[in-house]
Every structure is written in structure tokens, then in C-alpha cells.
Image 1 (cartoon, one colour):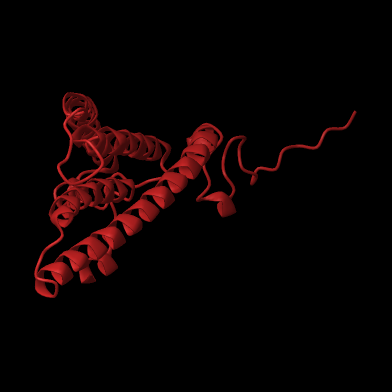
Image 2 (cartoon, rainbow, N blue to C red; image 1 turned 180 degrees about the vertical axis):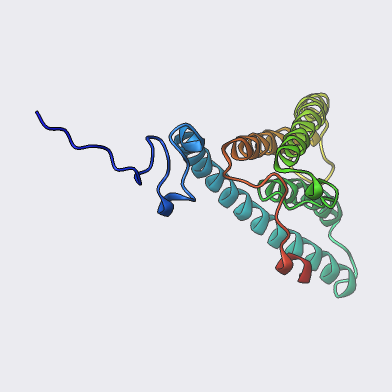
Length: 207
């Protein structure tokens, strides 16, 4: 039986074609594709949820402060509940907004020295940074926040129908989200789907 000799100019098995330069190889990041896709969908859902919560909380904060100013300046008697409501609404907004920024790796970072390292060194620094974030968030937000919420669960607020512990639940809730985002970033760096160093956004600087 006649056989066709191999073409000397053909690519060896496992090599990528010229048009496939940007695609993962058979033994490379392709094995992460399914996991990265699933985590990306969960991340997108959490981002949309956080964005909606931040918008609603910000609108509520503006309304509370506006009513406080109106009752003080126009009616001559500030509503007693507005001060406490504004304080805790601001805290909730700051915590959830911080978690949202973590999802985009948008917090302040000095990456000048890291960018001078080779790609392997940048990956190591990116992974170390995310691990430090996870360590801090687990012990401060999740564990510490849960203990604070538990200790203050029965402490009533003077003007609001909530307890201090119920409001402090935002700390462990936001902490779990931040840890999830950091794990997504770690997997993205290992899979090559994310750069080890967050990209600089000129539009964000203009804002």
C-alpha cells in the first residue's frame, strides 16, 4: 500500500499554525478555559449585583442627606434619624464599592518596579499580591467582621429599626466577594487570561 510522505514544510505535531499564534496550545492554557469561563460568568453576575447595590445605596445616601439639610434649614428641626442613617449608609456604600473595585483590580498600585521584571517575576508578584489580599480579607473582613457582628447583634440603634450587628454583616459579605475576586485573578494569571500587573486606565485617571 502506497503511503504519502510527510511534507517537509508542514508543522510538526502539536505546533500551532501561523494563524493560531494567539490561541492556547494543546498543553498550555487551554486546560483552564472551562474553569475561567465559569468563573468569569459568576464574576460578571457579582459585579452587576454590586453595581446595583452601590447605585441604590448612593441614591439613598443622597436622599437622606438632602432630607437632613431640608429639615434643618427649612423646617428648623433636623430629622433625628438622618444622622445615624447617613453614617451607616456611607459605610455600607464604601465597603461594597471597595469590593466592586477589587473585581476590576482598580485599587491604587505602584507597579513601576514590577513592570521591569521578566514575565515570570511579574506573575510571581501578581500571585503574591493576591494572596496577601486574601490573607488580609479573611482575617479582617470575614473572621473579624463576623465576630464584630456577633458581639453587636443585640445592640439596638436609637433611631433605626436595625441592630449594629445586622449592619456589620456587610463586612463578611463583602469579604467573601473580595476573596472570590482574588481567586479569579489568581486563576486568570496562571491561565494567561489576565496580565500579572493591572493595566493602566487613562480614562480612570481623567476621572
